[in-house]
Image 1: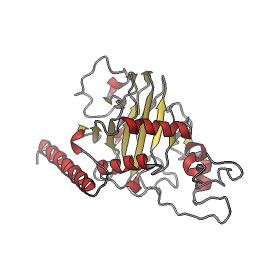
Image 2: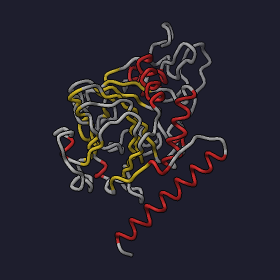
Image 3: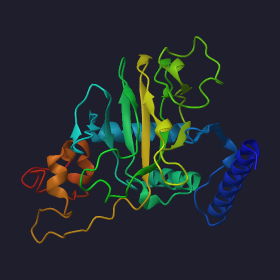
Image 4: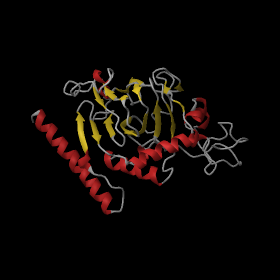
Length: 306
């Protein structure tokens, strides 16, 4: 079969599956998903752009939740140890929201599942990020490169990523795919930053979302999924990220605490040592109305929740 025909048939199959998911979700009273608003932008990596994935109110709500929860300096995963570490590669600040934290978050998570056709339980919590002037995230891949214990057991590789833009950016802040096969086809102009011209770039527009896959259909890693966030030149960039794994992500064994305050996850000591108390406080420490899973390891038993 000719390569062009294969691509056409694959595109039609994706649209058919998405349309089926949309119809079934709407018929069952679930989340509304309109596949006609998603367009294909790249084959290597497989990437799609959904115009107006979030409403303006949903964008503002996610930003408000992040500001309320408190933003922390963003970290990266060390390739050798698997630990979360500070790095000039990533200079944004952010926070993780709890899964189904409220009805708005739950609706967005369901919409992501409808678009990607991937189970909600395979996803990590949504991470909200803020990029101020000059802040960036150097090109990187989302699949797990290192063999640190605990990472492959927590859902395996990240198969897909959904990037949602929560604000407009006057200049810069584009999501760039340096290795994309579409980079030579995209017109370059003065509205793009120098960073964006190095690959296929998506301009951050409030409400839009990008879906790309880090694995090939056969399960092997796709180096062409290399991507980065260009430095913000003018304005401020807010975004939300949902990473989705090949298997359920939150399948760790619960270890109920018999004391008034303790750890409810067998991996709590390791997570705390890796800096997750600061990086993901809602899960680790909790809030006033919902105690976290690792209060003992985070030394939060004698203090107050967030």
